[in-house]
Length: 445
Image 1: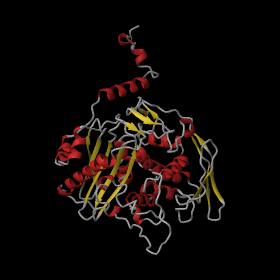
Image 2: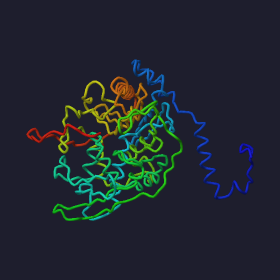
Image 3: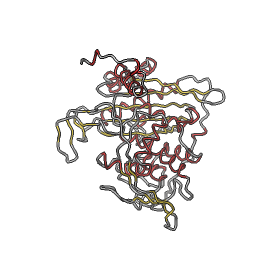
Image 4: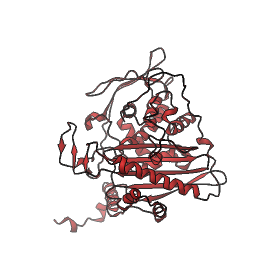
């Protein structure tokens, strides 16, 4: 029978068994005909920057897989913020590799899980030891970059946010567990977000297994044992995603085929924007979207989302390599210094030619604030995993120009009520000049 002309009876269509399938069909059909969203207001702002590289990328958003969300924040007389998103080429189905941006939800979910566990003596600062119970799992019993030389969730979050450390992400993934990660995100409304992989070259089956973990006290006694876990849940992969014309495989062999991202981590830049907004401005989202944090958790995150590696004592990073704007893409290019009075609360990711940044920018000197989220793909030779990307020639200069274009617009924009930003004014760490410990010069990120 020709399925295009097949007719179903109303009784079958209205059957409860068919209803979920019908909803999925309608959602997918709507996405197939949907066009990328671009707002003329944002286009006008971006058109004012005549920089050659900047305009080159803007003129060809499909080649560069460019997506931008500029979030304007306005305050009322009680300092309550309201948010308005403006989009450029936004398409939730236009895949980009999220790379290290997935460390942002993992940091949030790790703190939330600790609070939901409610186990005496177990906090974000508690010492942890990771054992192995499945193939290729790696033990971790100590961390030389921590003051007490023992790993903790707090230390993993610091390393993930300050310099985008990969092992910190893997350990948070192992602590929360693949099942809890994805169920928790769906419960908060992030139905298209999918986090299935550690940064360890594991197979899909190996990623379903997570390590047994011990929380230990100051006297090395066991406080709590979290057993090894396995995720039996299935995942929905709505469409095939293949990028590039060739790639190098794990054995450094050239494969003349696109790289397959179908089963990789996945999220949209709007998901990223909402995640960051939900933590910086929890009152602006529904209760179901908020994370179960204490006041101290919020303060801790605000500090390390915005603190510079040069201000951090543990780990003691080499600030000549991990400079102030190292993971602040909208301020990174050119000078390594941030403008006086400006702090960026953000998370970046870079891999396979993709560069992504989700940021909240606060200028305390000029009383300016805004959010900016963007992703761009810069890989002119079309070969992935060859470590030959156009980061320095196109990617970083473009994101810097984007950040400065929006920042300069915000500096000029009239506000009826200037924001009171005291909640984001942090007392940051200071390095001890007499501290002669070796610097951390190499990070897997």
